[in-house]
Image 1 (cartoon, chains in turn brown, red):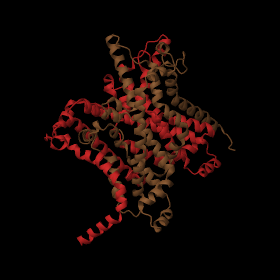
Image 2 (cartoon, chains in turn brown, orange):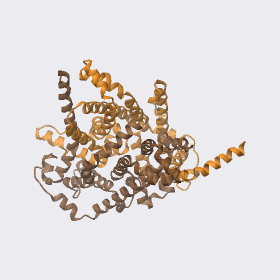
Image 3 (cartoon, rainbow over the protein chains, first blue to last red):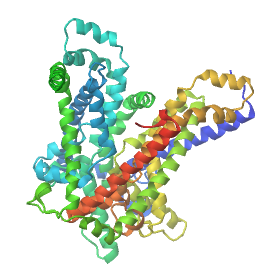
Image 4 (cartoon, each protein chain N blue to C red):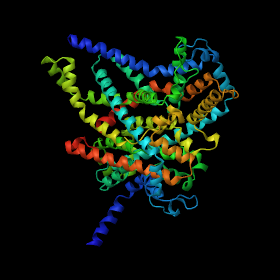
Length: 295
Length: 309
């Protein structure tokens, strides 16, 4: 039992209050969004957003789920992007990391440099955009366009590689003596042994796809291929633009999506993350810790 | 001589057949999405035509760069990018280190676990939702702050007409979204410190502030240097999603919130002048490359272990 001197007591008071305040500030916005999504519209217009709904109303959700086609379609696109992107991206990242972690592969430094250099220097987004649109035809391939560009990241390869380098050679040696090839060793031994780091990288990749709006913004013209976040952005930006016009011109422009409907959409778009977060949080932390210690 | 070298090359090619095959998707990916665009920067020196594409458009020398500098916006967006990144580095690093040290010293296990989870949560929220939330807090008619002001009979404040205030707003939003992530990285470095060092210091009569100053902070230096160095490498880059979503791409706010990435992306989408936009992109890439090289060399001179490569 540590004896508590004055300085420790001062530190504890400061520490507990700072942490508590920051933690509360971190989640307040979500509480406000959730609360406004179940508040009656007139109450929002009159009193603004608040933490506890003044006047409860499930109308926003009822309205969205009354005509659910667009939301469901956007959900479907985002789920597709997330599942395909995560499975494919994780497999390719792990396979690349595995090759770069093999000590007997003499060209590994050359390839590592080839990949690492891309983080130091890039051609900028203009040539990238022209390549994707004009040469790879991404505008006609909305599903490819929203998955392919994020499949591999150098940072993820490095984290998995350093984890794999920590796996003792003895494990692969015996398999090699039994005549197993490199691919076989990867699939049967290294991949399963890397589960802890793969779990967290998979989650980071998945979050990246789930939250992405940029690729839809750049490459997708047909609204039925909009990802969920981009669909939400479209709804929000349309109302902001209309609100700006009506406040500048003083003319009332049609009926805008209501505030509580916008917030309900934000809840629906973020929902799965918030629901899964408490269960998955430890994997994120684990992955970061592995990366920070080894990378 | 030569033929034997070739023979070893082909011999190795055969030996590494499987490994090379396993590397081929990643190689293809980086060549396609990174190296082909690097070759594509030639369009910064061309007048881009749709039919000519990247490789057959006519050369025009440095005209694109001349136009870019003459138009003048590039100086302002470069300044904004720099100011924001310097503020982000200072604010986020101090906040993250403070939180990490505090979390490591506090003893309530569940308190720590829960607060840490809460702090990490904003990192997982999309910028679209963050942008929506910012708008709802700040907008003139029904924003939370203005309804609060009105309820005290005070004049509402029109945030969307005051560009200078947005420097503060964006710094706060960026810190709010990212500090949980950084805190965990620093925390794992603090947890790696040998507890015996603290026990020894305690026996010698060091109080908690002395222990932090003399043990924790010095051992954190390598992590701080590497993370700041990584951030320095991106000092001429702005997170496009953040700036675009948080400001709502509002032209009134461009004077303080337009960064190189939003400027380039906007020109890319709205104007057919690909050549000039590519020139701005190349200008950014060269600045980034130069600064990371300079800082990495400086750090390497000081201590080799702290450098990135």
